Image (cartoon, helix red, strand yellow):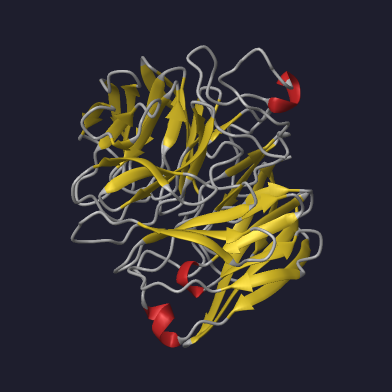
Length: 429
């Protein structure tokens, strides 16, 4: 079972479900038990980059404090996901113009290979259609009820049995990519949902979770010059109703998972190549609008219907907003790092800038927050552990990992997992 992300003004955005159980008196929360040993989707159990995991290392070396380091059978920028004692990632192997896209599962405890599965062999023309910073395995898998769902954008989607990697189904939903792929999938109400925002005719798509067949696809319809984006949907509950929040070029919209109907939308002009995943906390949805200059919008989705651009936007901020990394929220404050290393804190109610600190390096990886410790990794592989609060930030630790890092970290009790271009590291545990 999974849970729908809801918001509460009284409680933190991320709760330890194994300790809290069912809180029927809190009508704003719909919870199901999720153990701290599960990191089953992009940015963790709630998809928000916030963890309740305990005993996460604050310092380590290239060997000291490293439980294991394993070379992966292929490259990729997808983030690791964890479930049933396995770490799962997508990988790509390329020799000349011969490409194989697949998935690999390692044992959490030892890093030993459990299984690997080759899935798709895209043609040379498909392989060339990507940005120099992008790879061929950039979308993060989703684990649900013993199944691993993996997505390679226009090159293919598949469901595999988590226990042994046996393929349950494969599907190829074609669309014209720009700069490659990046949108990770989500599972809700028996459907696997992902964005397909390419060079033309952008859509959001739902596949049958068990069979892989297309259930619905909804055109974006907004008029923008550049239709390509790479956002990952977020499932929330608003007014007792499940909504799939999905960003595209020019807009963020909520969709009904049953039939794909657009419920409401907020337009943001010509913003394109959107990457950061939305954050939902305290009844407010926060989105970054992509290139050329990213803005941060705060939106109140309660009561929204149709075009609510003029009525439901709480604030808009334009300085130091990330184009690629997602951000986090805690206790009413947002912590963001932009692509060039400006780490900031903003008031979640007003958008007011609390502070800014420049961190050396460029960032694509999304930070994770454990308590008041924010973990970040630069594209060049420098990892930082910082202590953050509304009043300021302190760098506690930094280490050059000597490898490029674009993937976002994964966490379970006692361990931090970092994926570099060719290796997976388990720190602690």
